Length: 159
Image (cartoon, rainbow, N blue to C red; front, side, top):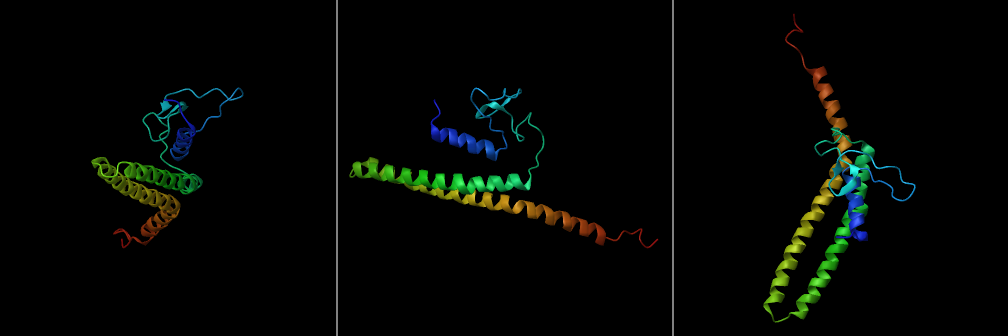
């Protein structure tokens, strides 16, 4: 299946969120890296979360911020837009089949779709919030654990 603009955009977002480098294309593009390809990116190397990847599970605060921003500026608005488009088209089809069982089936499908979109939008919002708060949580955990080590008395202290 040939990629249209929306599929290419989805691939770009997926690569940014999964930390898979996006490669330039064209006559002056550098040679692609060697090694196994990541799913959905036949030219790029495997991402860090796939077998054979870098093995580095860490990400920087800047990467977390970039992923949260991608969710906010691309995934959420594009998901909402796609859902509205599907609702409009399904509503039109329902009107065309008014009085037939097909209209009732389309309504059920539309209701299920709307619930799934609502769930997805909630998940995206939660992931965005988690990404933005993760750096602070790690710093708080490190400080808290350090304080526990300092405050803990050993039984050897009294000897």
